[in-house]
Length: 136
Image 1 (cartoon, rainbow, N blue to C red):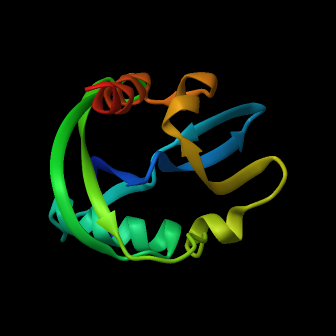
Image 2 (tube, helix red, strand yellow; image 1 turned 90 degrees about the horizontal axis):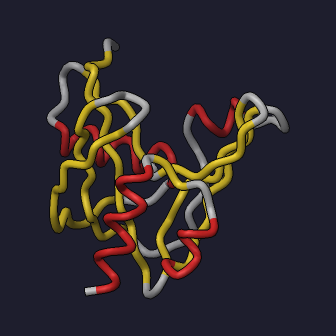
C-alpha cells in the first residue's frame, strides 16, 4: 500500500497521564505520540484508528477534537486527534514490535502530564499544546 505524505497522531489521556511511545533511535532518546502515515485509500480519521490499533492494540472509541500542530521535523502542520480509546493495557503489536531492539527501541508509557516538561517529547509544539490543555 502507498502512504500519503500525511502523518496523524493520537493524544490519548487517562486521568492525569498521556500515552506516549518512548523511542531510542540512532543514539537519541525521545517520546512521540502514537500515530503514523495515512495510506492513500484512507481518510485521516481512518488512518488514525488503524495506527492506534497497530501501535497500542487499543481501539479508538471516539475522536473528541482535531488540532493542527506544527511539526518541526516535517516542517508542516499535522493533524493531532484527542481521542478516547478502549480500556486495557496498551501493547505494541504492529511493525514496531518486530523492529524492537536495543538500538531501535519502542515502548509505550503512560507519562504524567506534569512530567512532560522533563522529557524530550516531539514535536515540541504538541508538548506545549498538551501542557496548555491542562493549565486551563
